[in-house]
Structures are given as C-alpha cells and as structure tokens.
Image (tube, rainbow, N blue to C red; front, side, top):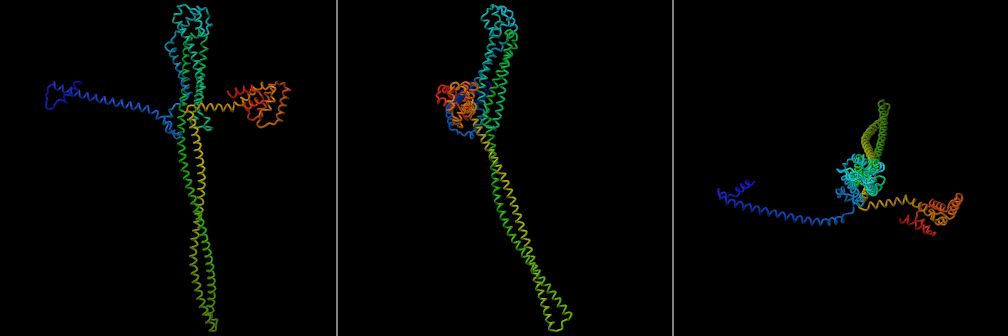
Length: 624
C-alpha cells in the first residue's frame, strides 16, 4: 500500500517540466501535500462531530418537551370514542390492559415461575445425580442399625431430618457422601413440598381473585344476542377455564401420588429416580399452569383489539347499509314522482276517452240520422218510379183519349222524372255524407279505444309502482332496524372496550354487579337470618312486634288478631316455646309482606324498645 500510495503521489505531484527532479525536494513536496490533506480531513471530522453533538442536544430537548405535548394532546383529545377508534387502531391492538389486578397476576406468575426454575436449577440439575442405591444401602445397613430403629418408623424426610438432630451417627458415616446425599435429598423434599404448596395456593388464589374476575368478556352487557367478538372470547374463556382446572387437577393428582409414594422414607430413597422424575414432572405442571394463565391474560389483552376490529367492521356494514338506504330512498322518491305522473296521465287519458266517446256517440247518431233520411229518400224515389212506370204504361196503351188529359199526363211524367233525378242526386249526396260519417266514426272509435287502453295501462303501472313502494318501505324499515341494532351493538362494544381499557372501571362494575346480585338473591336470605337471630330476643313479646310490623298490602287489625289467635292455637296444641312462636310470627309477616327487608325489622324492634337486638342486626346486616 505504501509503494502504491507513493507512486500515486509521485504521479500527482511531480512537475511535468522536470522529468527528473531532486529526490529530496520531491519527498518534501509530497510530505507537505500529505500534511495538508490530513489537516483538511481532521477539520472535517471535527465539524461532523460538532454537528452530531448539536443534533443530539436538540433531540434530547425535544424528548423533554414531547411528554408535555403528549399530555396536552391527551387532554385536548375528543371524548367521542367512535370517531377516534379508527385513528388509534394500530396502537390499541397491541395495547396491554393496565390494572392493579393485572399487575398482581403478572407478579404472581413471574414469582412462581422464577421459584420453580430456581428449584429445578438447584435441585434437579447436575446436583441431582445422587447414587440412590448407595444412599439406600447406607441408610439400611449403617444408619438404622446405629439408631436401633426399624425402617418403618421413619415415615418421611421430615422425620429423618429430626432424627439426625437427636440421634448420634459415627463420624465416618457423617463424613460419607451417602450421608450428605441423604440430608440433601431430605432437604430437597422439604423445599419441594413448600414450593408446591405455596405455588399451588398462590396460583389458585390468583386465578380465583384476579384472573377470573378481570379476564372476563362482560357478556351480560351485550344482552341476549352478543356480538361475534364477545361470543368468541366467551367461548375462549370457557376453554381457558377448563384447561386451567384440568392442569390444577393434574397437579393435585401428581402431587398426591408423589406424597403417597414418598412413604416410608426407605422406599422414598430406593425409588429416588422415579421420585426425581415425578418432581420434575410436577415442576413442569406448575410452569405449564403459569403459561396457561399467561395465555389467558394475553388473550384478554387482545380482546379490546378484537372489539375494535368488530367496531370497524360494523361501521363498514353500517356505511353500506346507509348507501343502500339512500339508493332505496331515491328509488322510492322516483317511484312516487312516477306515480304522480301516471295519475295525471291516467286522468288525462280518462278525460280524453270520455270526450272521444261523446264524439263517437254523436257521430253514430249522425250516421243513424243520415241512414234514416237515405231510406226515406229511397222510398220516395221508389214510389215516384212506380208512378212514372204506371204513367208510361198508360201512355203506351193509349187508354187516355182526350188530348188535354194526355198533355197533363205528359207534364206529370216530366215532373216525376225531374223529382226522381233530384232524389237520386240527394241520395248520392247522402251516400257521400255517410262515407264521411263512417270515417269520422271509425276515427272516434279508434281514439276512444286508444285512450281507454292508455288509461288502463297507466292504472296498472301506478298500482305496480304503489306495490313496489310498499316493498321498498318495508325494506327501508328493515334496514333502519338493522342500523339501530348495529348502533346499539357498537355502543355496547365501546362500553365494554372502555371498561377493559380504563383502570378502575372494571372492578367498580364487578363490585356493583355483586351488590345488585346480593340485593336480589341475598336479600331474602339476609331477612331469614335476621329473623332467626331476632326471635330469641323477641320471645313472649312477639304479639307486640307483630302488631307494629308494616304490611304491603296493608293488613288490618282484625286480621292480625286472627293471625295471633291461629299462632296461639298452634302453640297450645304442639307445646311450642316463645322463641319458636316469635320466629313463626316473623315467618307469617314475611309471607304476608310483599317487600320485606332487614331495615323494616330493625325499625320495628326499635319502636318496641328492643334496641340491643336492633343494634346487633344493624351491625351485622347493614353496616357490614
């Protein structure tokens, strides 16, 4: 590299007009150039370092300012969850639920896991390679004969450790590896018993008090038809519960079989390898139970994200339904406008039909009139022709003798001819008029038929449009109902999601639900217990208490006296004590009183000056 660099410098810095300069001057020139280049590089490195330092300082200042900006953004963020869910969707899918119960769960699981792993590392690793055969031989041949005790007396490892403190053993045995291994095995068994008891108790308590109360789906908030995410998570909760219960039962059975096989102590040492594998298996059961709890918690952490996904899906479905609703509304409005047009067209067609029908009737009457007139003209022409023919025959036969009569007949004949011609002319005119009337009648008939067909067509189209609009109205109603169901479902999903993500809301909700259940189911039991507790203090004053108790519906004095007489008669026949009679009177009060409670009983006891028992009932059932 040096030779290559030197040749490059020589090629770069040797003056072109001096092909063979002095060697010393060339080296001086090269060193000067190298020094200048090094100085330039150092200056640039210093500038880069300064710029980097300034950028780091500004970024640190920005990081100090960012929490304040985030707090301001968090404070100014709108409270409308439905409008902001889509913008926060990526973060909320991976967001872990933070609550005191969740912290207790994680701390418990991590603590138990670390203890089990530490136990496995210390007692089940390389140190657990005990020679159980040699230990058993030492115990049976050296220790027990030295203690002068049978093998069945040492029941378990605790008995063995206590005996080692009381009994003496020779120094050779005490210093042997087998004796030390026996002590280690016994201490390991003690540590293992404490570990299993502590781990199982803590995990069961954690499951009951924290996991099963916080990792819930809140299905009761969704009503009778829960959403898909709620139903799926509820099914997964059932599976998680079954798996954890199965693993706990398996742990109990394995530990039970371990305890049974660990007695007596001699057999415990003989079967040391089997016991060691069983201990390892039980430790693995505890670790698997921890993993199941973590899976349950992780599934619960993903639950708000699933709810958000269903919210987004419901929003898309709602938007599609809204678009369909708008299209159907537009179609319905177009149909209504078309119905109005068809009504106008139908009305116009009916009016035109009536007018053309009137015109048709007039033309038909005109035709009949012309035909009648034509027939009259034809009859007249026929009669004139007959008369003309008669005169012609008379003139031809020369039956008329006088010239005057013959001349008159000739004139009459000419007149008949003239009249016949006139009638024929009128008949021709009448035929032409009939032809015109026939054309007009045919035209009027056709127009009337066309208008009638158009009116009927408009009526049918209008009826079809009205039927279609009724179907569209039903479809609009159905879509609106679906949108209302989706909105209600979204509100429930938002409430469940806020309940899961907001610290403090879920425990408060669970507490309120428990109080409500207790008030519904436990109120009757509380009143029964209060009556049993108060009966011995009431005793023979039961009638005074009974007459002061409230009744709903009201019970008059006569009926109360009758109740007291019935109770007295029963007591007389069955030899009942005052305490039993007082309790029966309170039972009768509860039977006749619709909404009895402990407060009313306490108030009545104070009215009859039974303050001591009233105070006890108040302390036990009211202030507890």
